[in-house]
Image (cartoon, rainbow, N blue to C red; front, side):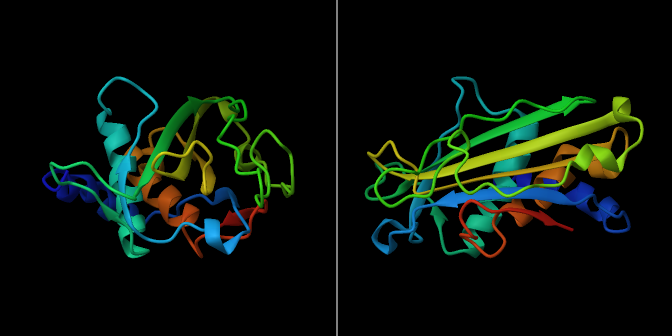
Length: 200
């Protein structure tokens, strides 16, 4: 991953002069302070038995950068991690059509505030596809991240970020989209639970 990071960052230089599209973000977390996601060690837990693709690794690198900024540190040792977090990541890309809503991991038991299927507290978001008259050549990218303590099934925090970009533009490149989505998703962490916002 350390070797890949410099190469993953190269497309960002091309995007500096490009106006990136806005990102729609929704986050849920437990309101009980004792259940908050306190910075500590973590490992990635991809929802797949296959090795992450290069596009997935780009998103993983972007998420890792944001988590490091917040004080979390990725567990890289040979020994088993103790008392840390599992960071579950799902990345979806769709061309031209909206994606179904994800199931997510509920954080709504005993002091939580819902989840993506609960419908609790979800704000009215912006239909980002309306930014383009012709939807056939747009790429929709969605990053879904949940953080749960090792040994627990319920997430202490989960978030979803998605944006659209015209196919063939720098903003549609996985590396560029990953950096934008991760930055928006973890801005003002943990965020206001249940609120949908649009990040320019």
